[in-house]
Image (cartoon, rainbow, N blue to C red; front, top):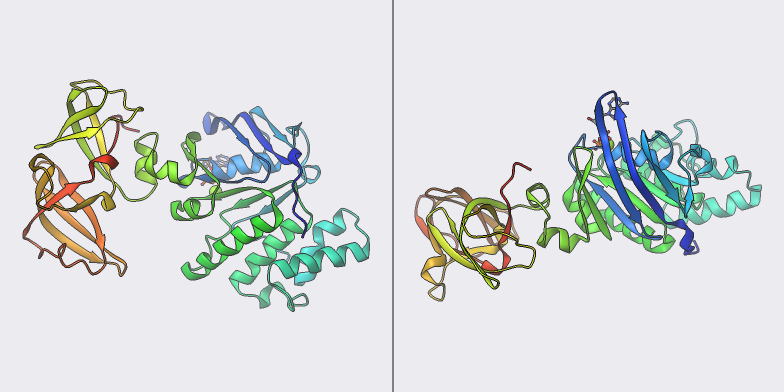
Amino acid sequence: MTAITALEHSVEIKAVSKTFGAFHAVNNVSLPIRAGEFVTLLGPSGCGKTTLLNMVAGFIDPSAGAIHIGGVDVTNVPVHLRDTGMVFQSYALFPHMNVFDNVAFGLRQRKFSKSEVTRKVMQTIEMMKLSGMEGRRISQLSGGQQQRVALARAIAIQPKVLLLDEPLSALDKSLRAQMQVELIEMHRNTGLTTIFVTHDQGEALSLSDRIVVMNRGQIQQVAEPIDLYSNPANGFVASFIGEINALPAAIYQASDREISLAIGDIRMTAPRRPEWKFGSGEMVKAFVRPEHVRMATSADAGSNVVTGEVLTHIYQGSHTITRLRIDGLGPIEMRLPGGDVVGRVPVGMPAQIAFDLSQVILLADNPN
Ligand SMILES: Nc1ncnc2c1ncn2[C@@H]1O[C@H](COP(=O)(O)OP(=O)(O)O)[C@@H](O)[C@H]1O
Ligand SMILES: [Mg+2]
């Protein structure tokens, strides 16, 4: 399939809201999406992802705001004239049709000639690794194959935008991982502007050019995966993306270069990040990822070394998650390489740990 590079296939979501009665399902969301970009809407169940996607598709009318596709205001354009390809969580394939007819559906609706339909269907079927299955009925396909048919049906029409609502969530773990790779390849092959919805942060991190984190109908942060992981904008994003220890902390000294804080009994000084606006005397939350906690060595300064009691080791093959209890702080999780014997302090015994101070994230201490 030829790459679709036309610049006009960007999407712009402009101050869009959707209310059901008094309830704000989507609350004043603005999001420009570049042509060819793979953007993921990520957030917990009920945060408004499907509602927002359905407004881009045209299945739901916004209560306020506008949707532009390719620079054109489509807010009042009906679904079938928006040229979007959609894949639903439930696939929504036509069970009485075979694979070929499912993939051909949108093309026939658009009145392509018979030979054009055949050419485009066969091209898409080959790209989605469904060759030889054209005559099969949907009920004769596995879940993964059905999902490929749903994708093929959506992209066969060469839509301006591809909209994918949790398309992999019904698949088992290994198939999901395989389909993630195929989605990345499909996106590279087609160059389609893609909006992908998931509640699975791992899936979002591995697939996306940019991730839009949503909670309660609002955008929390828009960023590339690496930035989101290393620089979460608030406590919600920090806790939702990856594993993280959230520790209460008090700042007792703040200069341009460094911030000194007390986390329970622990005193530590961390290089200041430009986004930290805190002053002396403020209470904050210190976020530390498990991979940034390690066994202390003789090289660690005493003020950064903490003694905890080992609660559990959870062996996970490539790594071990060790939970420790630290007086006045509660449990802390530490991630060590799989066969690390140094970290294997027996359960119930004290262990000295240290934080990688350059990786500590400080955020305002609010209920978010
Ligand atoms: N037609 C509707 N009527 C009333 N409430 C709705 C309707 N559709 C969705 N909602 C509510 O809006 C919120 C967001 O739903 P949805 O967009 O499906 O969330 P998500 O896809 O993120 O799980 C939920 O609380 C849901 O119950
Ligand atoms: Mg949904």
